[in-house]
Image (cartoon, rainbow, N blue to C red):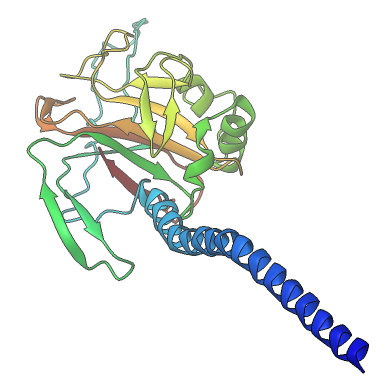
Length: 274
């Protein structure tokens, strides 16, 4: 009987020791569990912030402006030239004519705007007025551009645009012949850097005169494309500069047109303020 009682007492000691060991293991484990919980909680807090930052970077791209004023004009054809010669005479003449091309059209004007911090419903928590306007104006036949993949337009994209607009390569004013040089300054489209003098580009006229081909020329126009081959005409904003007709403009832009279709080609305008 004494042995049985002694054995029970010893069993209780063993069980108590085992419980204490388990408690010690739990105590040692709990800090690790708490650390894991803290890490997971931190990740849950950071994820929405990362999402917000990614969303905001999406908006750091060209956007559609409001066209406040629009006037369109074209050249008045010159009247016929007259010549009077005597009967029986033979006259050799040299004729010089200036013909308005139906394969191009131009947009010039000024840019205003502001910087905002908006939510998804375009409600502003703050905005900033601009003392001076810098950035780019873009034009494309496409209403949707993948700005994250924007790059210099390649020769295939340019030729394909010629073909789409029925521009014969026999003409002197095709897109590829017009944008034959690669001279322009460096600039950003959203977060994408376009390196200087890497894309086909022109500089439109100032005071009815062609500008020298330099990276410092005003009213530079550059051909870009996205990953889907959608062509984008890009002009760098030069605020309040003397333009082609001695008027002050912020931008000058020419885009190609299909001379054979009865309905003019629609172009979608984008602006990026920097």
